[in-house]
Image (cartoon, rainbow, N blue to C red):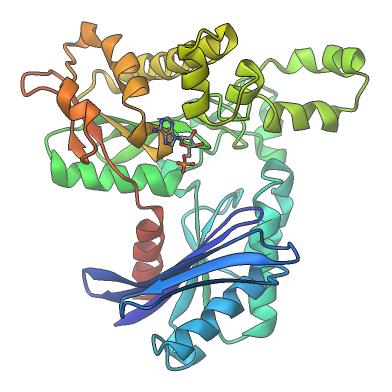
Length: 393
Ligand code: AMP
């Protein structure tokens, strides 16, 4: 039996799950999260399989300190006897450049993550800092990274290539990598159990950060994000696909640097920028209902964006057997699901209105629909844990 501590890190957030893995069975024994890492007081919460739950606030200066906080808690609560009781820590790491898949955190991995940090500036530094801290403080602890690009390693070269000088791909790694791999992989694996005959699947991971993936026989063959997490669908506050030749004009008109324009495109655009209301779709939908035209435009653009990629990916797949919605928006917004699906009636896709309005995970299309539609909760950490465990074995 293996004990694995999985970390999912955000700029100021820290989430963990402690897994017990025994053969094919995998159990979450404890989980917790910290908000406002780096603030004077960070709020944390913890719960475990013994029914213990606790929350509090204390200074957690960085993500490495977050690990120590929970490591000590797990020992106090008897979930770990000592550090040696832990077989490995696993990261849902983001951008590994030329390294994808599941890898031991070593000098080579750290160097490659540092090299591609300009392509994932909001994510890689956090993971690197945690990896280095943990290496320094717990030198004998095995650290393993599962990259978010991994599931997309099967996308053919002609679909990961930009129309730029070929040398850029070779020398600088300017190519599409794709992200949210653990989520798309979880859905692909789940669909193989739920509907094994569905060979051509499109997964829509719609949330604070969104991407769509085309899956053929369980393997990713296309995805919307590219060299960075910025491209593809527009997100809550990210622009998504955008025309790079507008940059010089924006710099001149706004009298600001390239970094400042990029910050607007990545933090104040998307739903927030278009609607001027919020980066939360719930509030944008409410404003649209009350007649706010910009909010309505933001919703219409989002639906159209999703629909366009589904059309493109259906062509790539040569048809479609199943369409899956996941992520905060995909799971919770019956409106977005129904607005997208009503435009897919030409495929013979028919949504079951009652199932779509309900709150239960599962199939939400009618029995005679030619394409099945699903609302499924994703579980990214379990994919990381499974891959880490396979590596240990
Ligand atoms: P995630 O990042 O996957 O946790 O998704 C978070 C996002 O889901 C939030 O920013 C909201 O915009 C969106 N969301 C959550 N619940 C709903 C809902 N009932 N309707 C529309 N959007 C929602």
